[in-house]
Image (tube, rainbow, N blue to C red; front, top):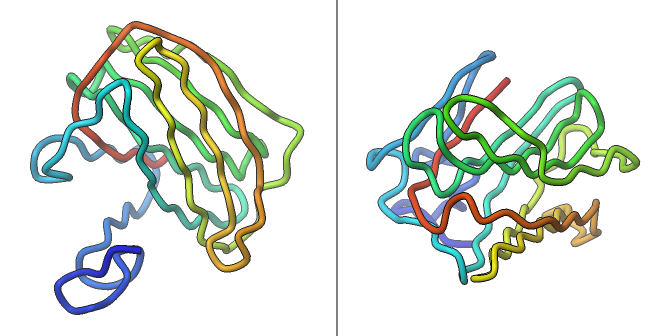
Length: 150
């Protein structure tokens, strides 16, 4: 866990991103001063209560063109999607898992150069794996990061 400038874990404290309410999206350089590229792995954290959906956007070109990694505590699912020209298409999903309520989750995205993407979700406190999905898509090869709440 990387601490913020005050020594707090980034998932808590002044430097944590919190989206309140539904249908909010945050993208651009002010969100995270880094790009994601095929051939890299990265983590994001989320805290979802019953009925909530957390989304991390990567390879962001703009609000309508990017990949989406989703933890859905409403439909009990993990999903990887691609959005192109505002149309979302599911790459892969697992609807057989149980997303724990009110737990910090670590979502690891392993994005290979050949377009294969693996998302592994674990509970932060216990390290217990919640689920893992893998799929492949070559629509994008690099771009920014963003977050969305539904």
